Length: 404
Image (cartoon, rainbow, N blue to C red):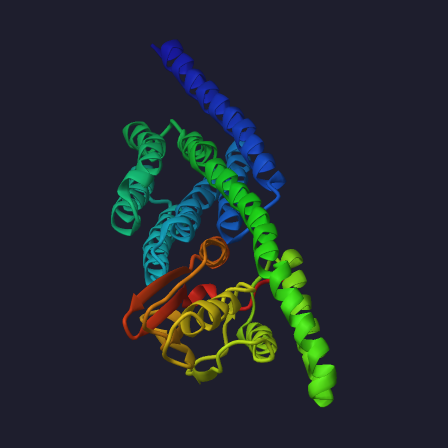
């Protein structure tokens, strides 16, 4: 009987060692792959932190220091919660990350107390079990789409199973393997797919920039502008220099948009709009007035998203209408969004050439694409007998100053 008992203990020790080494190999693979990803953000930072904490716990378990290994394991769920919230939370819902992380942190503290005061190992594993049950509850209540979190939920089966095994026999320490299986499935089944989607968005954005430049700097507009500047030399020489400055500023902003992948201050975008409006006023067209109602100005947005809308208002709003001569540019904060409105009062019978309609639609499509990719914003166009309203909505938390 004694020999049988010794054999069983040896088998348990070997099983624990195998789990440790397998977990460390898998953890190293995931960690190295995650570090090599070119695009690092807050989401990836929390994920990498989770792996590092787990690796620390495995090292302590390998040195047979179970006290520290369990403390490290209890710290993974709070970090994983931050990773998930950063990935899936609804825009503007900052409270849920704090709420779920606080709950997980309380259980981590409970594990620490149990370990320090030599608590029963059964209750330590019970605390682990509750931590991952809380993750499932968090996934259900905080996910934008429950279907998108199925992989997360299925992956929690591994740490939950490891906790149940530990509760049934406290000599079996499979918690590290259960956690690394969770992170492994999430990383290769979800995170890598997100990174591929992000790279595809960057390619789409680059292609969109070229299309935007070609539409914005179309030869017809440049030709007309230069022609009118030439006429000013004979009719009003004092206006030639300002006209050239405006024309230069207009071209410079368009070329800068090709290389600028970050958001720009609202004031900088309005400088481009002002240059375009001043340039448009020297061209043969109907007279118009631009009114501004800025309730908020301290925010960032993609370059060249307001100017195309003002262009549409000038040439396809009041320019193609029999009535109306006012254009309003308004900004305000509303329900967690920065709202930008470009409204013209052009109404009556409108006529547009096929080429004009194409230019207008391509310009609007470019604006929508850039807003969606760069700041998760959206643009809508509302036509009525009283005129046309173009409205941009950007989540406020996406309009902060971009990181260098």
